[in-house]
Amino acid sequence: MSAGVSEELLAIIVCPACHGDLALTEGAEPELVCQGCGLAYPVRDGIPVLLVDEARQTR
Image (cartoon, rainbow, N blue to C red; front, side, top):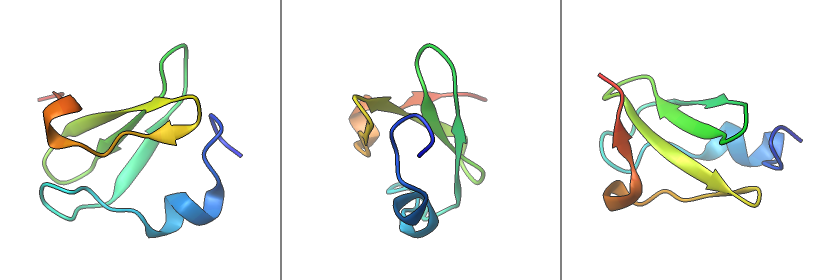
């Protein structure tokens, strides 16, 4: 498990805004970053928060 997120889950989830692929960034505050639109979704306690309102823009 990466940042508490299972590999199986990472393989099937997509960005809720544009349906692009998500890449996990690890660190003090892990995020799932969309490779399409650039939104970064937080991962809290191993649970991805896939709400557009909670995402931040990376570009």
